[in-house]
Length: 67
Image: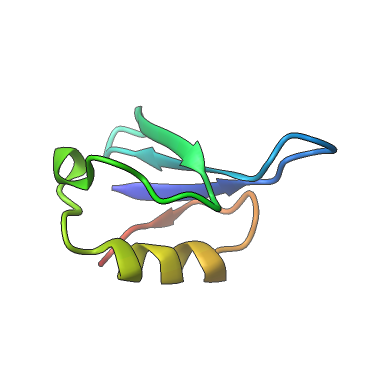
């Protein structure tokens, strides 16, 4: 799974994209709000670790999500 942080402009907030190994979009959510239904993506119980990754992630750079 891969993660990308997208910079918002003006009134549009920053967003996070989660993509599978084929880079197909599987989740799209605001960076300042936690993702619901984490079990659907195999991330149940890893909310705090995911938030740490989101906070440290630079804008526009795709990276593998290893948590």
